Image 1 (spheres, helix red, strand yellow):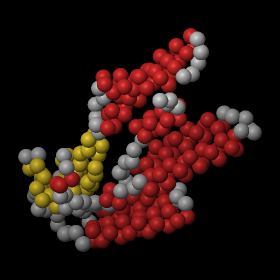
Image 2 (cartoon, rainbow, N blue to C red):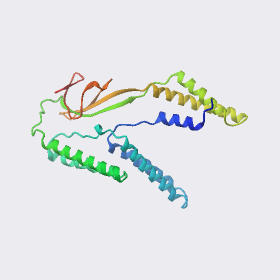
Image 3 (spheres, helix red, strand yellow):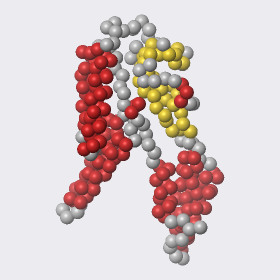
Image 4 (tube, rainbow, N blue to C red):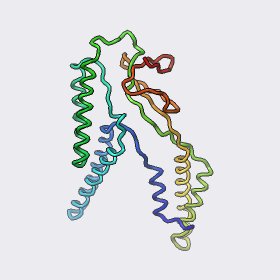
Length: 250
């Protein structure tokens, strides 16, 4: 069976990429950093090549924003605030403006939906602090509320079997290119690359999931606790008590 370089590249891409469930605004910094890096490279090119390079960099940035938007998990977008309106209003506004800045990077349709969702989150945040008890139960330092709930991939461990299997595939691929001593070198390089790919693919197959629940206590401490399944039943905003390393719903 012949294995082409495009097939191997596709396998590697599938291994190395995956959706993540994070707040939209958390993605802005790495996307913008990558864009600035691309722009710096473009500026080192000649005048003839620079416009096309900058256009490509901008398109890449737009595609990154669109991909994050497409993969968003609405459950991770909700924010929890503590205290009264005067204390939280500047923070709520700052978070809202950060959301809007992200929305502006999307196409017209996505931007409109994004801005509606951002405004709805802002209104809910204002309502939550306006209707909160004026005197919080500060006496209960171990009491608090759930701030986020998300599913997390736990990478598996590759084994020698995966490395050997990948090495065989890589060796076959490498042997198909080059000639004479060049073919030998290509086979060795292919085997090494195949071993890496095989090991990564096996890790991917063995990937497990766990469920992370984050919460903030009345004393200001922020903590997380993990569960093996999604049957824990906790939701964002739930009132809890944290005792003996266990979450208790109030």
